[in-house]
Amino acid sequence: MRYQMRQKFFAFGDDFMIKDEDGRDVYFVDGKAFSWGDKLSFQTADTRQEVAYIAQKLWSFKPKYEIHRDGKVFAEVVKEFTWFKSKFTLDVPGPNDYEITGSFWQHEYSFTRQGRTVASVSKKLFALTDTYGIDIVSGEDDVAILATAVVVDLVCHDEKSSSND
Image 1: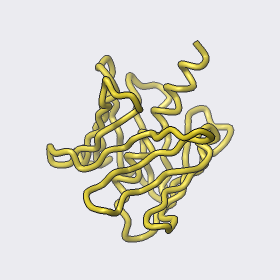
Image 2: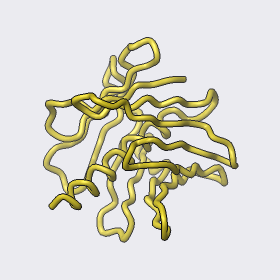
Image 3: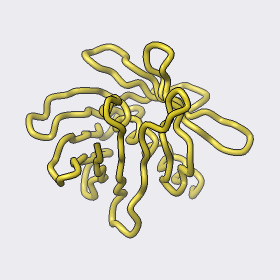
């Protein structure tokens, strides 16, 4: 499945609209403004029913976010540090974690699981707001991958902002 994720230009908080390959609104991500740490509600676009909730874990050495479903922690997204490049891990229940690698500064990266690429993210250049194309292999957890793409965007923007200070 192919999605397009676009950050809303005029919004309080970090809001994103996610469309399917036919241009229909599928998900809306509502970032809570004025909160301690990032908190985002991942909702269906039509009914605004929450399907996941993303919360930043504060007081952590590495950037960490929890993805909640049905009021319980479902997965954790962690930015890992290595000597030469950074990567993210999407830690889901069981042994099937995702590893996210690529060029995060250029917003070109992929999700692999058990050595197989299952999703790729690519930033569309020259847009007023951040726009990403996200291709996900059939049978994968679209919501978890899309929520992780939101987290990667948040972490990269926070790092870019702090390096410009």
